[in-house]
Structure formats: structure tokens, C-alpha cells
Length: 401
Ligand code: PMT
Image (tube, rainbow, N blue to C red; front, side, top):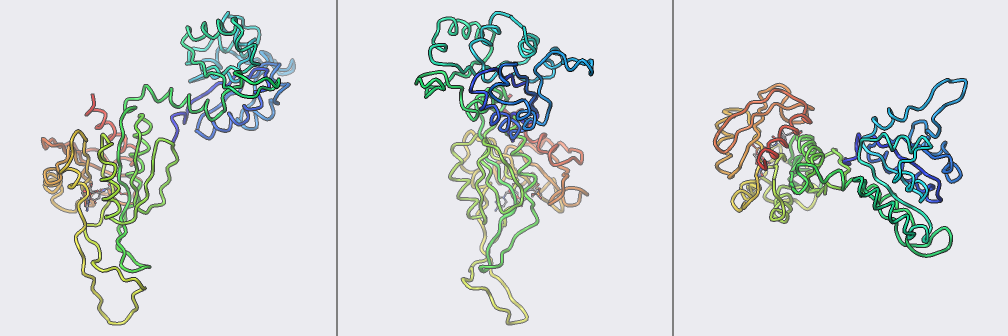
């Protein structure tokens, strides 16, 4: 999920040839989960139609203060400005930049800009000579002094045929600037978190395995919550149907406990936090048949080897890392969880018991108890796994406070 998800964005489009790129820009912002309200200057209609942008943004596009005489309604610039979490003017022509810098507000877009209290981002676009004109430089400096973020124009071939600086930044770049800028104030911005999720499958033969009921939801929800707070996430995932699409989450799919062990050790040095939500098989078949095992005798047994305990092996070598384990218990829950804290050298354990209705595998809810190294016990209510993930990420944040 992008940090833009759920953000309300006013996109101001002004009259330059780069306005054609706003179709992609609206698509990318919407794809990132943002709600986009397009406001156009009258001149921009020459370069892209309001119909195109309204279709892509799934909202009416506004240009004029007043709607038709029959409707007797107007577009309230103050309401539009206060609605926005951020305002982006792209492309911003030399004309609009000058008016923004000097407080002229002769169209709806400029009036919304003057009323905006949210962060403002400006992506200029114009011909080379206009871009390097001292007045443009001065206007950009003035707008920077208002704490607006200028997304600089790029070098390249311009619509005039000249080659130089003036092309509006590509929509992908603009979206990346917005994402980076919104992430920078998030509390876990500089933290890298390794999360294990899902079951492991221990092969018996080419068609069979020993697995468990973990759906992966708990681990994926923690990953989603961690990126919302600015962290970068390495998600080491056993086989699952869970999905996550976010540039800040690197999903590394694994099958067996041995695979998971290797990946966790490969990345352990570079992470700040580990959250082990995976249900890892403690044993694996000693011999894996190369061909499908045929049905013969009435009884069939499999000799098992012990898998490495991934979490305990990380606990044994940890330096600065904050280690959170889970404990899935069916009896003597608290005692077993405490033993795991010590044995695996954990900082915190998240205990869930299959004796609690709504807790554990597969369900959308969980009921957990936090136990820390000092054996301080904090039982939580039954909650959605999303809410449990928030509690776990709160614990990580408290550690860094
Ligand atoms: O995936 P869901 O359907 O949403 O379900 C979530 C869950 C029930 C799987 C999750 O909440 C959970 O409890 N995960 C841990 C399950 C488990 O394996 O518990 P355990 O008590 O056996 O293991 C203790 C800890 O050691 C766990 O953090 C586990 O990841 C880790 N471990 C266990 C064995 C092993 N060989 N290596 C490990 O690292």
C-alpha cells in the first residue's frame, strides 16, 4: 500500500502541452489509493479535456467559479482547499507560477491555491527560455520560500523542438516525490523490519507435503501496518494467498523452514526489527522421495528430522535488533511463552492460544497477550488482525521512543 492511500489530492492543471501527461498522473495517483479532485484553468482545456480527467479521477472536474445559470450553484474554493490533504499543480506554467508567487487569484485554481492550508507541490513545465528567465527563477524561489515543494523540470526535447530544461517531470517521478515527502515524517521512516509470515511446507515427495493452517494474514497485516508508519519491510513469506503491493515491501517467497532460515540469515544484519509471525514446521521428512510414493502397505510412517529454530538462531546472534516472536499454544500458555522468550532471546513475545475463540489460524481476528523480557504480561481484547498488527507496531515504536 502506498503512503498516498486515502489521501485527498487537489490536482491543478494549467495550460501547457505537458497537461497531456496528467492523464497518467491521475491514473497513478488513483492506483496508489489517493482521491483526486482535478481543477483546471480554462487554457488547459486546449491540451486535455475535462472529460478525460473526470473519467480517470471518477469525479467532476472544476474550472469555473460558477456553474450554469440554471443550476444556481458555485464551486466553493475554500471548501475545495480545506478538503485537500495536499495540492499538486502539474503542469505549472510560467504564467500560473507568477500568479501563485504574487497572490493573483483570477481563476478557480488560483483561488483554491490561495485558500489552501495543506502542503503544496509544484511541477513546472515550459519552454527552455521561459524556464531560465530570471523572473521564473525568482518566482520559483518565492514559492520555495512559502515552503512549497518544487518538483524540478527535466532536461530533454521540448515541444518547441529546443533541447534543454523545461519538460514536466514524468508522472512516475512526481508520484515518487510525493511518496518520499509524505514518508519522511513517519515514525518508522528509517527502520527496516523483517517479518516472517504464513506456513512452511515440508516436502514428502513431489506431490505431498507436511504443512499447517497458517493463512499468512497475521504477518501480512503487520507488514501493511509497518509500511504505513514509514518502515521498509522484508516479508519472508511461506506459501499463502495473501497479497501485498507496495514498493516499500520486498516479498521473498519461501517454501520450507530451511528456505526461511536461509533467507532470514541472509538479511538479518541489515534489519532493525524481526517479527516472526510464521508458523514454522519443527520437523521435516528425513528423506524426500524423488517420485510420487505409491499406495501399498496399510501403514506408512515417515521419519522426521528436526528443523532449525529460525528465531532461536537469530536470538543467538542478535546485536541491536529488536526481536519479536509469536507463541501459538494450546496449554500452559503463559509459562510456555515465557520459556520461549528466554530460550530464543526475544525482546517481546505475542502469545495467542487456540483455546481462545477467534484467535489463531485462518481467522480474521486474534486475541493476543504481550509478554516482555521482564515478564510483564499485557492481555489484549479479541480484535481484528489489522488492529492486532497496529498494537504490535505500536510496541516497535515504543521501543524506539
Ligand atoms: O497466518 P494466520 O492464519 O493469520 O495465523 C497467525 C498465526 C496463528 C500463525 C500467528 O499468530 C502465530 O502464532 N504464529 C507463530 C506460530 C508458531 O509457529 O508458534 P510456535 O510457538 O511454534 O513458535 C514460536 C516462535 O518461533 C514463532 O515466532 C515462530 O515463527 C518461531 N519458530 C518456530 C519454529 C521454528 N522452527 N522456527 C521458528 O522461527
